[in-house]
Length: 474
Image (cartoon, rainbow, N blue to C red; front, side, top):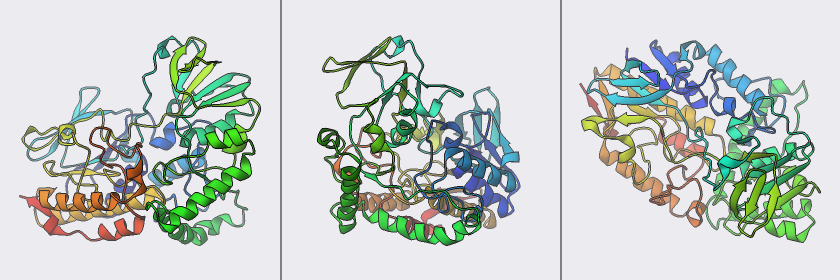
């Protein structure tokens, strides 16, 4: 049986490892750069961190939970669930912690994986499950190094930090800020939120589950939210009826919660709905209406030792700065040097934007498989369903390789090109083409993160392996 190495320990890595282990593959090993498993749900401990997909659907189909305390689970409960599944499926015991992968080179027969401590391991199949949202992005702002208080990215929130009575500046007003600001506003002396672009925000149908209902929540609600996710994805089709309905809902939500015309105008997007990530919150707008919360829409000129100066010369004092500025979503496998056939560097291969057949297989890189790879992120619905579909297809491809006596598998260039043509063609009519966002490669402008549709179409496309799309070497 082939030796299978997996980089990461989040939902993607757990989905892949569990799939292979359940189908009889015994040599499955995982490498996690941190000291504990959990991926993004281990790292993001900022106040209010939670999922914007309902818990019954943001969970593995093979591991429904009867313990979700609320419809939209918060970070501690999601992390506890993921770790419980990893232990139950035998994934945790196969994970080597504090082991950072720095490079991987194809030898012609296997992958030689190099770690930060200088050690090496060799595996027959290498799977990247590092995700798209694992490396924080912090903008280069003049004077940032001079700030005298704590300054950190939201995914690097200092454990035990108490911001009670402090003046807190939050740079960035998207998904993280929407969750964190309502938690900071009641305890901070003042919160200053720096917004570059306003967002479309849906009301969030959240609430705690009664104890008697918890055992039934997954069975009752998962099918509904799976269906709803497919409908929500249609709102990302530029100009569609679903998009008009979605836009109306968000505008009504804003009008209902923000009475001040000037503040409401500052929070009103001027781009097509879906072009940027649609957010969900019941308490973000009310938080911005508090007397101790300021919304700043001017650009930042520089950071001083005691605060932030805008390009128009206004100065806002700060005791702490939170960078809610997202992640290097376009840096697939950033920080890992991957060398394929004939010495080809993966990042050079992706110079015009990352691409992969089915979002999983890259021609020229035999036995390299990607979980949550290019064009498999979602604008709606649950990424967990995508991860499970990818894991199943990976296992099928390795099954076929083993059953035929082959030693390598690799997508053909023609199959990858046909796939990319179809995906980019579908994306060309989506709302994502109408503005700049983290979904797009900054150099080429290609939409490299997202899948153009709901999860069902992807699941159907990856359900059965098509051997003709691959080359199997002996």
